[in-house]
Length: 216
Image (cartoon, rainbow, N blue to C red; front, side):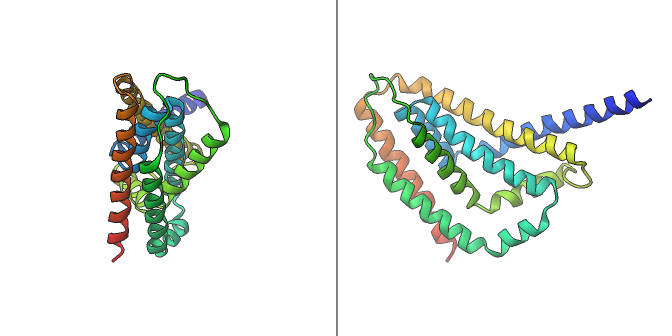
């Protein structure tokens, strides 16, 4: 009898894990600033750099997923009350990132990429902060969890399985995105990569401007 209960609990938590993967993947699919940076990093600096961007974004999704799944309403209330300031910081970061990307000089596609761990840590933390400055993400998770009947009355293990699935699903999307970008990198020369930086920079600047205008 006890084994049957344990098996039932395992099946439920595994199902929640799979649902979390689907939610994390679908929430990450819209190609916003993080997706643009993932593509740009793959094309200009290599796939490993792009995956660091994805890891930062997925970590933010994990944190916001935890707030939604564990019912931490006081955190969501604080984020909602400070939404203007948070989005102001996010818009400023986007503008800074867009200008920096526009002016960046790509490395020669024929040369091997040099890996710098300090730069990777900076990219991870910057992407994490940038994603966290979009408080709409947490309300999107709350809405999705509520629509699917998730997040209410879940045990710690069940909620953990759900948000871990969200993290895996988000990582999976950026893995696929970087894989697709890697295919096109072989067809670009140094001039092409320069244009990648400029186009990516312009798109990110536009995203920052949209955030700023939304505050008016």
